[in-house]
Image (cartoon, rainbow, N blue to C red; front, side, top):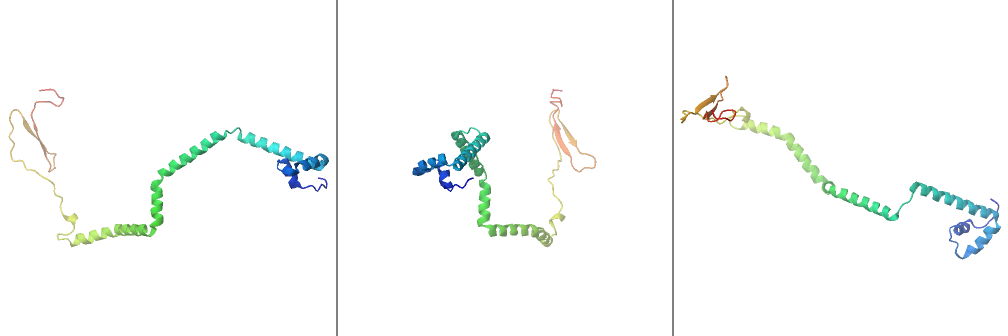
Length: 181
């Protein structure tokens, strides 16, 4: 550029339309000064180029549609935050009662570690020894006699070597396939 000492700040303000009352004097200077006219032309060309790049990148954006999309995203985010209310509750509980929760967790852990020893120790001191030494008792029935009327018969099933038997009464009215005999 030449040695023009005109205020660049005033020149750029005039290009942007913000020179106010000095706009006439700046316009007169630009018509007379070749260096400032060249500077104005370069600034306008670069501004047009940048606007064109932005328009090509962004495309036509309807402000109302963009605002609706933004509101929809905010709504979705608020709904997802509501679903994390349990997490927020836990975070709040942990933040405000960290020491108490840590103590409770320690007490549960100690109980889980100590409980088997207590059961073993108490089990040995119970009269008759440990609970596991007691035989398992099952319900049993002794059938001494069965009276059957008509053509019914008693069926007893006891597998070989087993102490368990199944007894039922077969009336003979209906066969296995559902037809009468």
